[in-house]
Image (cartoon, rainbow, N blue to C red; front, side, top):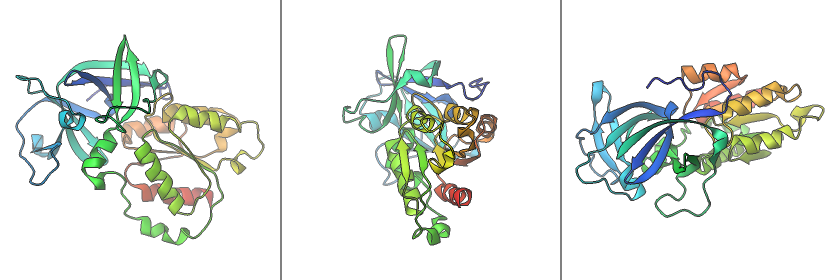
Length: 300
């Protein structure tokens, strides 16, 4: 799907595709969306979770269809077949079955708040942000967690971690700062980095919290004695990873801190945007081993 989002990198803006599941309002970053299609019949998968409707194959590509109505405990209105939002997550081609699509909203990440800690059972733990647009509340879902819950292999790819085995008994005192809004993925990344021998980790749920922490060291001499490296997701409430990177690299003292972007959004377009704001390296989820190996090379 073509979009003019973020013609200037680091603006802390996104385009949000607003859609409905039942009568509830939800959103997804348009950067994750490849296409919107009318619903079509699917081939059921034996022994699959109820939330997975089955498979279909447009243009010789096999797509797994996830019914968000069942994920969220909603009902598809009678006489409405709904729409399919096609995405790619961590190397998997997924179509999310929704009721309808409202349109695209351009907003700032600073307008997106963290979800409340109390949520109803159908949405507990799978909302990463709440957007308020023209009096409407739009829930931004943690699509990576939804997919991971249905397919455990879709979370982080741990293959290749055996190559960093020799470092696991080594204590790295270098401070690693992590910014990742998904609590599920945040903990997985922290665990993987800790397992690789890093024990000095500060983790934050969005770029703004990470920036408030990092910027507090701006006046220190030898700033890398305090922060050795930053690992950031791209899309996060309050402040995205591109904006966080731009702020770090625009500070005369902080710019020496390496910043690695680790996101399911990494493609050629996103790589160009990451380079334009000064990212030292970029890694596509779910391949955590590549990230760990790069961290070790950078701080050793």
